[in-house]
Image 1 (cartoon, one colour):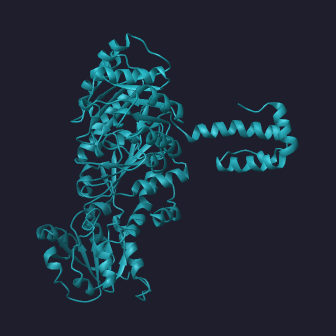
Image 2 (image 1 turned 90 degrees about the vertical axis):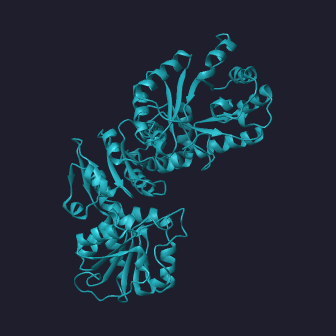
Image 3 (image 1 turned 180 degrees about the vertical axis):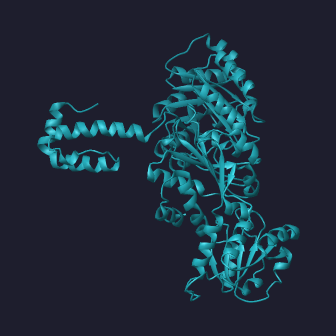
Length: 569
């Protein structure tokens, strides 16, 4: 509530210079556009700042979707400690999992938990038959939930399968302010849209104030059906798709009107598969800024969880106040993915292993260079819904390699790669891109691949030579060669793997690895030990992202910000 005129006058009389300076700082922090510096009256300063600050804060948070921290602990003392940690992390509400407590006194413990919790509460006492840990008498379980309602809990969760019995137990009473969440969990698959609609109707009929259902993603396209139900629901809905393929459901629920999402305090300490951390929701995905009109971008791959693309793009989106979110997309069938997510709200995609070549066939229009390479790593959905594909891999990688060679070659015109023997490991989309880029710079290209026939196909496209990967260790026709690994060999978690022996690396002047997780792979570490210059995948990653960002947003790429983000990584 704004201060009274008397208090404002007191502030003006005694603290005017300090108040003025303080409000200017706060206004700058919130990026409030105002002529506050020119306003002399402290009362007018406060009023201008107060209303503009409220308006600015509303703009900064584009949704009302809550972040709920599931709390699981052996003791009540531990739960209380976790509650305060949840508030510090940025949670809006906590789910108290009573079924995880080793010992439990319903009245005393629930009263304490409610009294000491700094956030609104949701009490869950999940039985084993619905994925929880409680295996006792149902009346005792119902009694604990009723006690929570009577003592002031904000929400309780009761399973659909038990809802009728619970309602009979309660005799139709709903004590206190408590909202009843009726929930259903499917740990096997995601039903059809029709079956999900019928499920929601049954949950509503069971007396739910808030509908909750969680399904399991067998394919990322399963999430679309859940979005469809959520956005058209006439009652508050909590709708989650479990597993890595369902991650998008947890991040994008504000866009589709979800009541809340779950975010954990620590990675891996989840109450259901696929839950992100609160930190990632707030800081990585800019969850508070996601609204119905937010554009969706993502990195398509398999695997994809290692990708730092969301870190890079969401950092830039936030810096530029661009209304978009960039997510991980674990895709099995890329054609099916594009057919399912055909809305223009799904605006742009980075594409990584193993989809770059098939992705090209999904595009309505392909850049001539990408067509020559035979692979795309960037796809834009035009306003008319058509897909445009291009390739920025070769630009980022070749630039990084040329920069790595600078200083050792006195090149006035042309490229330091001209005339070099350039060995590419891998014959997939990234391998094709680097082979194309090296050829364009005047290098002599060699393709090494596990499958020789595949290496030969790519070599023929660029007029190069083919080798099997097994032959690479004994391939050293000359010294001063360039080696570029474009496969996932050495990527987390298999960090001890390398595509070539350490001894063979003595013949290379420079070794490049497209893998950037870890930043220094075994291949690069051993190459450096053998005296070669090394270029890591981060340089390629940042370089190829410049053009993608500009295509995604229509804005100049914030190159220094990109470098700073990845330097910290």
